[in-house]
Image (cartoon, rainbow, N blue to C red; front, side, top):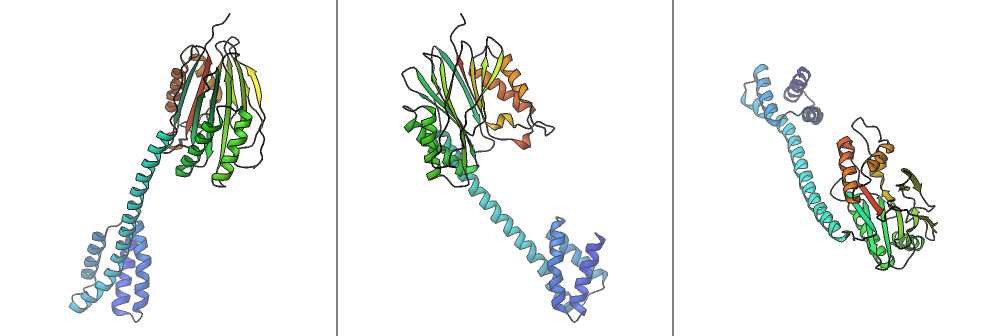
Length: 337
């Protein structure tokens, strides 16, 4: 603080008694930046100015009036800072309103109804880190014993991610009723490649479950591997298929695989908000802990399971390192022989 007082005193003396008044004015800018950085208020600078005039014995009216030029230069900088602050707050307010609109639109456009069946149960939860999510899941009931589902993650955030997800939902709803996973991803890739920003890509796990034969057909576009929980053996099996993320290659092809889903087995698909969750100590979660949560709740309805996992993760998550989180679970509800 002593340096601040001495610097201001030197500026006043240079301006009142020196020959280089322009140099004093230039020093005002550096001084203003310094006191603003210290969170000094305009009132404190005015009080300092008065105290220094008294301390320097300046009583001549003309000199006092002249010294106000220096005070004016300092206060002008505060004025700019305040106007910049108000401008920034106005922009933030507009941005918040836009994000509220985007969030509302996304919630409406991406809303997915979870169907009910006698032969299987489904649970899903998708929670954005902020107002607009980069995650997405969709379910399509084919009404013929077949069910398509997908979990996606946009590499990118905000309103552009919301727009990208809307395009993907439109594409999936258009193509998904009659296409196998590999064909659906191939067509969705064209949608993303043509319509989404070149710096934005989408990962997706796409499944088609035939609950009359208990066969799962699946493909992946660079997404996190999914899991199958084998109820009878109490073991987890990782399932994945080769395929680049959507939007990278125009003529990309996607591998398709299939596997049998036994009675009480569960298909678990998620985004990196689960696998890369950071705990309070800033370390990544051990995914074995998530598997243990699934084991503990395996006899409950899938919606209760995903809710239990989500609430458990929120208790250990670092609140400053939140990410979009989506978890989808499908259980074969047929009884063991």
